[in-house]
Amino acid sequence: MKLDLDFLRSALVLVVRDREFLRAYGDRLKADDFQPSDGSIEGRDIWLVAGLALDHWRKFREPISGLLTSEVEKHGKLAKLGERRMIGLRKICSHLLQARIENVRGISSRIEEIKQAAAVQQALDDVLKMHATGELDAAKFLAVARQVVAESGETPRTPTDYFEDLETRIERRRLMDSSSRYPVLFIDPLDAMVRAIARGHLGCVAAPYKRGKSMFLIWVAVAYMMQRLNVLYVTLEDPREDVEDRFDAAITHIPMDHLRDKERVLKRRLARFKSIVRGRLRIYDGTEQSVTVADLENLVLQQREEGFLVDALIVDYDDEIKASRPHKERRFELAEIYRDLRRLASRYKLLVWTAAQTQRGTDERKVLTGDTLAEDISKARKVGLLLSLGAGDKGDDSIHIYVAAHKYDRQRIGCTVFSDRSRMLIYDRQRTLRELASDRKEDED
Image (cartoon, rainbow, N blue to C red; front, side, top):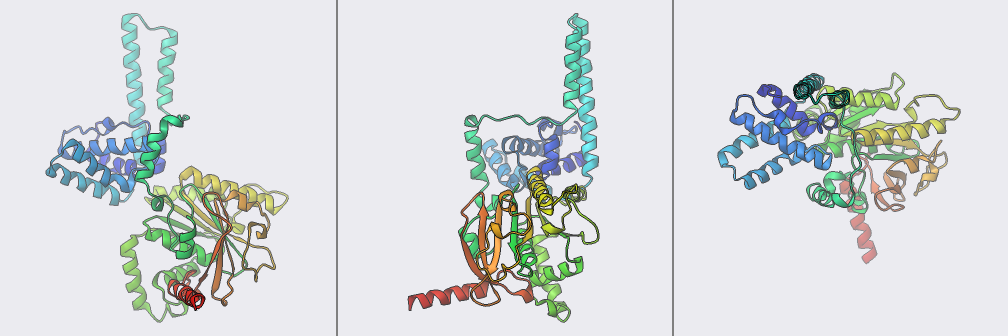
């Protein structure tokens, strides 16, 4: 493309981190498109990193992202690059992983213009060459024209050969361990039993009224932030102010009714947490208007344009999502909503969570299966993971988390944990571990 370094840096940030940009341009861009026009060392480093990032995308269909530094280090050893060159490469990697994503639409438009202009120019050169040699005819002219049109659109996805793709799968599993593919929930007994959901999957937590669905979703959001994932939390039932108070309590472990009295502690603890997660949470208040799955998709794309690449979308809760078109019964609308949520997760490789209400009369039940879901019990078949929050048998603060359905791991197993509603913690780790130790001691006695 022979562009200036500032533009190449901005475009390379997208190549390294933005999945949607790569879906549109990852197969159309080449490392040589990032070849510097001035021949500078920094330009050559950008060229090298672009090649590694694009190769990674074509191989794994995932942005290289956090693997960039290790891949550059590996390439540096193989190519026997000197330490001075590696210092520059490490500096570029650090910039690409930390830089704010900006002007996505402008960068995409400029690349589109340049690629189209290059395709047209190449087509003219080919036509003139064939005309000069007398080889040009209508069929060849049409073939050249079709090539220009083909290069103006997104490269179509083609089937892959399963048996020829084995080495790629092995390398993908080596590079991406289970913890990075399946982020944990930081609920020790649950994490020990099963993996949660991965990118592209839809998860749901079901519970009776006031059992702790919102508390669970807030816990998941905080857990994902701690694993350096960007979370978009959409509240459709409770006003943003209430949700913010709940996050303040959950993050700082200050009881909600003490947030006002402990402002200094609140600020200090939030500042410490912010230094770790670096602005990885956005809250959207959708309580004042109807929200469809299409609106949620537009919201994800809007955040991307603003430089916030959403990794996890959490929607509280499913009954407040409006179907794209009316149906005779609500259960048919919910079936459509869950199908669309599943497709949204798959299309943008998101971790998507929502919550569902169980039927009346389930308040005292410990084990809640998919059959207890209100309105549409087929939700259990549409989600990758369905967790239920049943009544624990050790007091009001105990909750039995049951794996009602799981497409990717074990199901129909559960564990009892203790919550702390005053601090908005679905999992009070210290108390749960203390109670488990007490139970083991009683069993031994």
